[in-house]
Every structure is written in structure tokens, then in C-alpha cells.
Image (cartoon, rainbow, N blue to C red; front, side, top):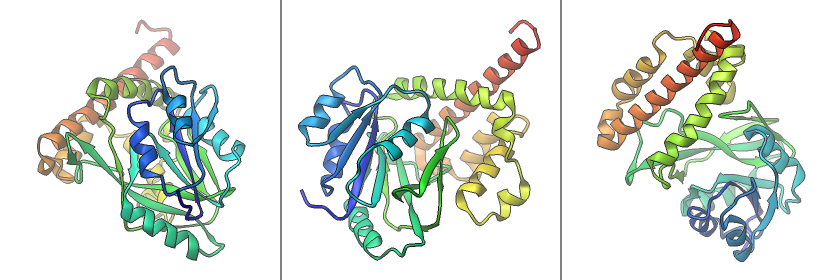
Length: 280
């Protein structure tokens, strides 16, 4: 194992199936940390057998879990690559990251990387709505906000890398994806019902904000205000983004995302009805 000046953080919860391939993809680093949310399978055992440092913490929210890892672990390097177990940096990205951190000036605090989502071996090139994520950060200059679908805030300049990393969200099957997004939709509905999810709604920021994360947050807040939001999302993904050109995988993914959006709205209405004393 050789080091290129980058530590690795992998967030896990019962990831014995996906973790081995993820660890293989980050073998370039001599400082790999697995931050585990009390897995009940062989996740911790596999991580330790591969030489990773394992830390366990009780899960309370996605943002708090990630922030606890950022501030509580003893990373050896100034730069950190953050991954989930179903994600893999490509070899070309590994080479580009090594050069990027070696030449980064002190004002640079993070790098945005393109993520390629796959379903049934098909890259969801057109169906994927948000393909860019900040995943390579300078320690001490990053923190997560928002409890679900968390956002990474960076203190400093964020640059973009050209090479991608790959994501396999359906590696455990569609039933697992639906179960996970059922949980997400409950959390999103709670934020919507309190007004927190739409607090950043600003057309000016959605169109003209220079900061990518601020722009996306404003766009998402405006999206939550749309009437017939699930149907709008399906039409946007299929016809505007051209998900239909991704074939059966693109159409399936768009439909699943629409169902997810519908769950959020149904649960939001249920919360409001309960709050008003009406029968759900």
C-alpha cells in the first residue's frame, strides 16, 4: 500500500456485501477509516481484516454522523476522501486526486467530483439529476448541514476534478433501495412540514448563486414548492433531461424517484393533518 497524501473515510451500516470492493478501490491510501453505525453483520470484521481503522458510533442523523467522523477521528493526512460503501473511485480519479492535492493552494478547501450512478450495469447519465458532489476536502474546512440528503459546506474555494467515481445504489437490490428511501421520505416530510426544507427558496440564488451548494439548495427549496411535484419530477427527468435515452434503466430510475417524491408529499400531508387534529 502506498500513500498519496489522502486519508479515506467510509461511512457504513451493514455493508459486508459492498465494503470489500470499496476497500479495494481505495488501496492507494495508507490511512483508511471505516466509521460504522453499529453494524450487526461482518462489516467491522471485514474492515479490520483489510487494515482499516474501525470506529463505531450510534447513528442519530446523517449530518451529525458525518460531522462526528470529520472532527473525532485521527486522520494522518490533510486531505480526506469521503465515500459510502457502494461507491468506488476510478483509477483515473485516484491519479488526478494525487496531483490535485499536491498542487492545491491554501485557499483551496475542497474538490467537486462527478458521480456516475448505475442501475443494471447502465450508467444513468441523463437520468441522474445531481451528478456532482464535494467528496475530497481539506480537514478542518468542511462540515455537514441538513439531517437528510445532507449538504457539505466548505470554508474556502472549491475546484472541480475531471475524472469520476462510481456509485452502485442498487447493489443490494431494488427492495433495499425502496426501504432506504422510505426512511428518507419520512425525514424529508418532517422537514417540509416544519418549513425547514423551503426556507432557502430563492429564485435569484437558484439561477445566479456562484456557490454550487447554495445554488442547489435554493433550487431544491423552490422545487418543493411546485404543485404536482412528483409528476413534474417524472416529466423533467424523462423528457427534459432525457432519461428515456438511458433505456429501461433510465425509465425505471425516473419512476422510482417519482414514487419517492410522492411518498414525501403523502407523509407531509399526514403530518399536517395530525398537527391540525384531523384524521390521517
